[in-house]
Length: 208
Image (tube, rainbow, N blue to C red; front, side, top):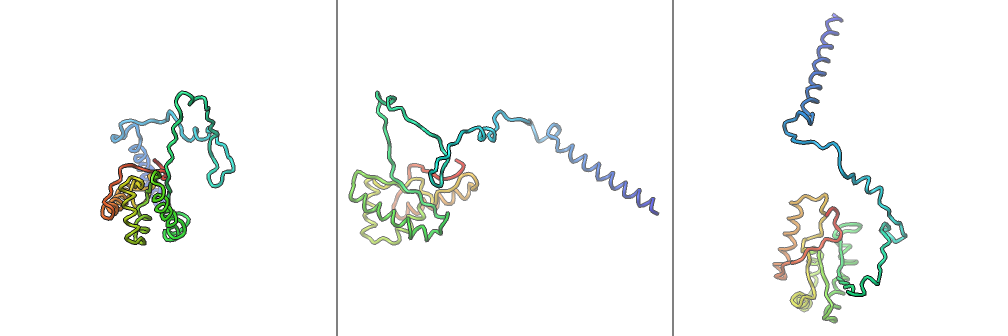
């Protein structure tokens, strides 16, 4: 009886071993019909490159890493360096605070100052990207201030860039979500301001 059980167990073990070997063989890149080529080594290993980069670590607050870049002023003696200053503000709808906290504690003040200073300084311009915050701020404006906003847009002082509901991440976000939030923002701009963004603006997403 014991010998019979032992033989049965051995037969089962042999069967499982054969099945495992067959599976491993079918997954072999050299024999799999669905694989046309297989590269077993890379030309550049980005992990090694990262380890070779020389990062400085100055005490600069939250973001410390960087490179010490020096400018040779004589280089621009023949052709002067042109510096383009773009007044803007990046506002995360979600990070360390809630949307409402950001709006009430920070973003509202930024947009209020924008409306005030652009009206006083006709040569100044400003760009805005996150339509969700602008829409919430817009709801608090009276008709006079709304007309001021339209005037700034028509004069080119205020420009919407990207125009999405948020400034989305680009590495871990599905393309359908990116398209949906872009449509949401563009529809709001079209319906409320008859505006269509012409330029892109992605200064803080991950994975461009």
